[in-house]
Amino acid sequence: MTQTLPQALLSQAATRGSAIALRYKQLGIWQVRRWSELAQDVSLLAAALQQHGFSRGDDLLIISQARAEALLLALAAQWLGGSVTLLDPDLDHRQCLTRLKPAFVLAETLDAVQQVRSTDHSPLLLLYLDGRGLNAATDSGLSAYADFTVGITAEPPAPVSESASTAFIFHPVHDGQALRLSHGQLLEGARKLLSREQLGADEEALAARVFAASGQARYLLAPWLSAGFRLNFPEALATRDTDRRELGPTLVLGTRESYARLEHWARERLPLPGTLSHRLYRWAMLANANPVRRWLGHWLIRRPLLDVLGMSRLRVPLLVGPPLTEESAEFFGALGIRPGNWQEPAAPRESADVPAHLISHSV
Amino acid sequence: MSATTESVLLRLDDISLSFKGVKAITSISFAVKTGEICALIGPNGAGKSSLLNVINGVYQAQSGSVSYAGQTRRRMRPHQAAEGGIARTFQNIALFKGMSVLDNVLTGRNLKRRSSWIEQMLRLGRAPREDDEQRRHAEKVIEFLRIHPWRHVLVGKLPYGLQKRVELARALAAEPRLLLLDEPMAGMNAQEKGEMSQFIRDINREFGTTVVLIEHDIGVVMGLSDHVVVLDYGRKIGDGTPEHVRTNPEVIAAYLGTRRSRAEVR
Image (cartoon, rainbow over all chains, first blue to last red; front, side, top):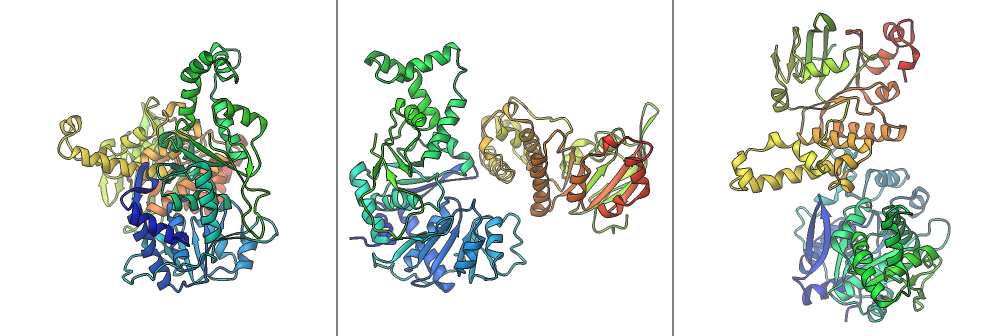
């Protein structure tokens, strides 16, 4: 029985070691990591973190978009019994950083490094992912993530097994109490989600949301480790629509805003109103049409549109936060995508970073 | 110019150029140090683009010499310049509009290929491995200039500012030692100019590429350049740091004084 996220990782490595666990795009080419490779990577990172003084009860602060490297280091910190604080890289966290005085930091870009450096406090370890603009050669306090495990020979300890220990901490954008999620909470929530949405190891999930959202940890990361499906990272937020089209995920996690953005993106590309093509589109999108019209509409319009959106294989659209707007619900509903709302079964938490966490029925 | 021989990548010595008796450039000399960003400024018709064309061998100067990377030549053909590590962009975008961004950038890698055209056509011998290598290099440049969301889009469908960036990417794909940029920010709004300036600065800093650029926006030039050369009517009237040039009376006269309208100083 797995009690923690790293244990779940080891369990997947033991049962389906050669199956693909992660897919991420690097320089335009999709790269894969299998469960066994992932477990090795994370254990090596855990050994490196331990060598730098990270131990049980410490916290690793990450300021990054959803990237495979950030996920692996987060799991390595949790392997050692530490917690992970995730901050949104698009926001200014100077005040928060001054308050937190982080000792171990992973900063994705120059901007994130500068935010950490703007406080009086110097971390024990400051890792960066993207060295652009950083003068790492002359800055002794900075280390490249790419070189972090070079020369590490020590064996990592066994991963922690206390399910009550904190896995992730999410700080609200404004004042308020932080949300702490334990390994037990995450795995229990994942179990319920897998059961309700009938998620299995064959799912293709796309992690295109901000990494620093608790929904990402609850509804994507923990279920991924529990079910053993494939987690795909887009090349960048700007390329997520192209990457979704290439992947054809069966499981996506979005907010009202992200669904609305996609709807807007699709509507912008529709034929102009008044044209024959637009009339055909309207004809095909009508709900409650007769079966022949539904069938024709599907093959002529809706199916190609789903291909363009990268949603033709979508089975489970998850929704975090408030429900879709009426317009979005109508648009996606016509395409057979209905992220309905139901409150997640109560999970003990200190406070929420969004008003409510809602997940959907599968379609 | 006080640049020493060791640190100078490009030196123009007494360059003169005329077209059918009309003097475009008259006895211009200056040096560009390795790793610096040098701006050529001046009113329209001052000879800036002609000078850039002399540097990369499109025009042959009637007198004077160009020294590049320690070699002095009276004449240098464009292909010799390209092989020597000089790449350029053009005032008017010169891309293959019917090709994708990636394919355009890959054309910048042509000189790096070693396989024969037969190998490439039949994908034999060195060609497949080389294709992968060229693609990897092109993708690095595409990512560096943040044009990856459009890598498979036809260039002709992109907005002007992005096309300018693709042209810069194609030049950068050749891994140049010296990058010549002819009005890289022409026609751009303030935000696009800011982004392009940042990219040029990043190219200079991350790859150590020496940059010679022509730009009309004095604000951009002063913020971006280490060294400014001012031309007027084909003659050099200023040469030095941005601060030095800014206070040069002849430059002030050319830009703000009697001979040119204020409209040309943006």
